[in-house]
Amino acid sequence: MDGWLTSEDVLAGDSGVTAGDRATATTAAPEDGADPVPAEQRTAIQPKSDSARDDPFVIKRILPIDGPIRYGEWHWDDAGVPDGPLRVTVDLEARTISVFQGGYEIGAAAALLGTPDHPTPTGVFPILTKERHNVSEKYNNAPMPWTLRLTWDGVAIHGGSTVQLGYASHGCIGVPDAFVSRLYDIAEVGDVVIITDGQRAGVGSSLAS
Image (cartoon, rainbow, N blue to C red; front, side):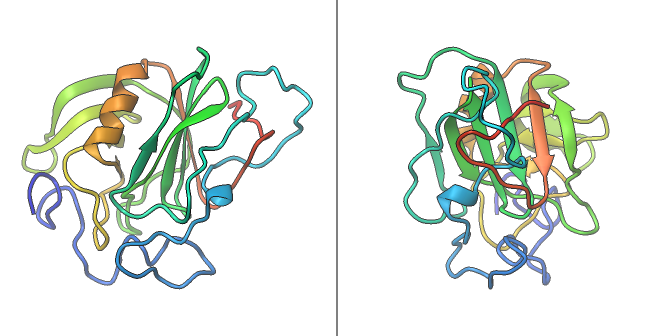
């Protein structure tokens, strides 16, 4: 494997923990890299009241994606979406990342996440820094392009190589380069990333942190 997709560097290899095995608590592991998460279950955050429809943090649209998102697959559609605050959600159980602008989902992708030994933390994380050509000082200078740093101990959203079934990160959120480069272009320091484990939402749910 190239980049950080090696068992010696940033990713844990296929040793009983695969990205698909922990996709949901109630669904069997997928075949050929499929992530068994239907569109209506892809986004994080528990539903709240939909009374504030003009609130920029209330979800107004979910991307119309047919079938489950497979590893390496990503979607982006910001055509006609009005300006608004950015929110990024990650759900560990669904193993997906979603990008919202003003409450409209404009991006979604399958994500590589941590293992039990190196878990991806849950919580609300403002983006601390943006680092276009970052490398990992911790893992043999492995490339981590388009880094959006979430914690000072190394957890970040970043690119680096093709997202594949059978690998996991050491706590970071690994996504395809074409996806993370688009996110990097619009994200700003201070924008919020919300990481949950098994919480879902749909149109009318709140993304307020």
